[in-house]
Image 1 (cartoon, rainbow, N blue to C red):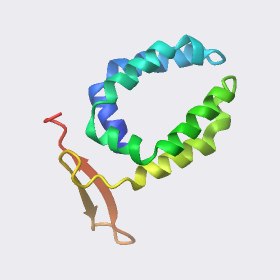
Image 2: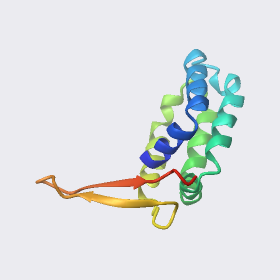
Image 3: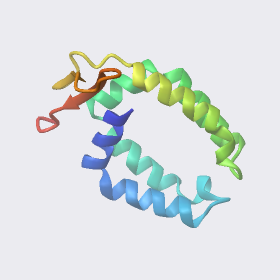
Image 4: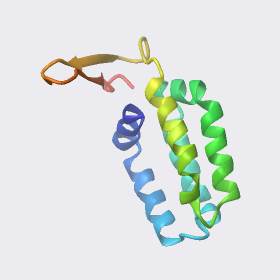
Length: 124
C-alpha cells in the first residue's frame, strides 16, 4: 500500500490535499460534501499501473470498505477492520512486472531482513 500512497502523493498531491481538507471540515457529512473531490483523486490515480493492479487484486476488500463507509457516514472510524483488510491485501499484491518496481530486501537488520518496494515512476 505504501507504493500506492507514494504514487498518489507524487502525482495527485493537490487532489489529496483538497479532499483531506474537505473531510476534516465536514466530519459528519463528508460523504456528501466531498464526493466531487473524492472523484478527482480517483480519476488522478486510476490510470497508474500499480494502482490498477492493487484495485484488481483487492477489489473485494475495497468494495467492502466503501460499503462500510456508506453505511457508517457519521462514524467512518467504525470501518477500521475493513481498512485493515484492504491494506493487508494491498501489501500482498505481487507488483513484479508492473511498471519499474522491484523488491529490495535490506539485510542490514540483525534480527530480520526488511523488504521494501522501490519504484521508478518517471515513465508514468
